Amino acid sequence: MEQTGAAMMGRRIELECRGNNPQTVKELNLDNCRSDKGAIEGLSEKFDSLEVLSLINTGLTTLKNFPALSNLRKLELSENRISSGLGVLANCPKLTHLTLSNNKIKDLDALEPLKKLENIQAIDLYHCDVTNIESYREKVFELLPQLKYLDGLDRYDKEENDSEEDELDDDVSGDDSGSENEDEDEDEVDVGSDVVVEDDSDEDSDEDDDANVDVSDDDDDDDDDD
Image 1 (cartoon, one colour):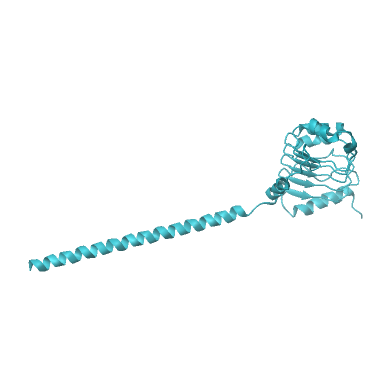
Image 2 (cartoon, one colour):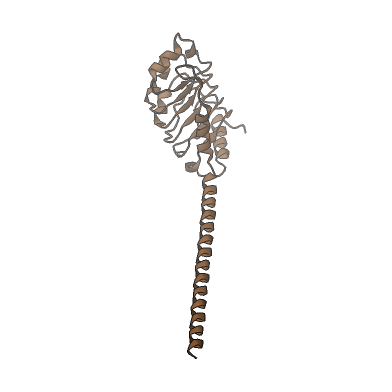
């Protein structure tokens, strides 16, 4: 029996979790997992640790089922058929990067709800009809003053610094440098303790030498008395 789009998306989410608790998953890639109803299925608020979500080319026409993801920072929605309903993203207060390229965004009114995203830094609208509006860039920056980059360029047409997005990806993927630094710290502690031990042994040997000298002096005094 052929699976419906909803079942396929639910199954894909399950596979992407790799047996992990949804509450611990930080990144989810559902690209090309087509939805036959044009809506997100199988994704819930249980994914409250999710920071990066990619839904490229999934056949979405609406975001009405989009869950409140309090830690989501990067959302990829390219190559869908979304035309409105972006207000639901207000439930993702930490969102900084939003990609809507190749969607059905036709006018600035559709972007109006994004004003509620206080932390939004970068939005991509490549190949959306809204980009054909006269003075499109100036109007979007005016509408969203918190925005730093639009279609990869800032308001002065300077390219977005890739390091900012790379830093986001690095944060999500995790970094083992912390454990490595801990190992280095432990090594330094061990080295330090060895040095201390060596210093103590030197002091002990010096004390022994002093004691031997004192004993020798006492023996000499006894010989003189005789």
